[in-house]
Image (cartoon, rainbow, N blue to C red; front, side):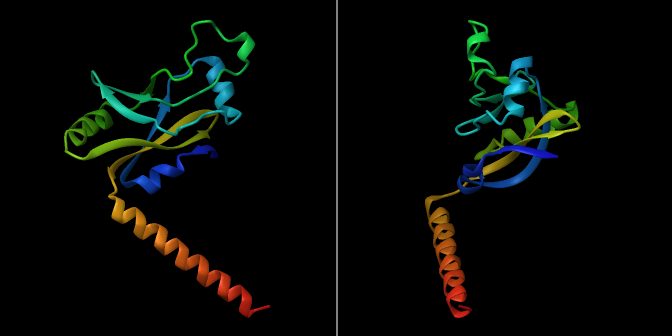
Length: 150
């Protein structure tokens, strides 16, 4: 499993409750572009429409911009490939108030591009401040321990 990109903001802004793996329906040049690491998950999300699951807002620039089709949209919605059982489960969960689906990681497995997305609940501003405070304390401790051994 080779990780192509991570959505680092997702772990900071949301509390991840469950994780799911899905294939992505792509066109040829998008596959090449993603395998080169040219995908941006910032601001993207997963949504249910008509019994199907879509990745919305992910930016995949064309592999060769000069050879891209004129009607190519780099931010188009991309269908996610899940089992019927998983889709029914997500439909039930998405009706709960305060839950959203956020893309976490894009990676390759056996030559196929996969998306790991999570069922998440938004964090409050107080929770985010607490995380930042803990990080700063840990950084100070590591810094002071390093000075003792010099």
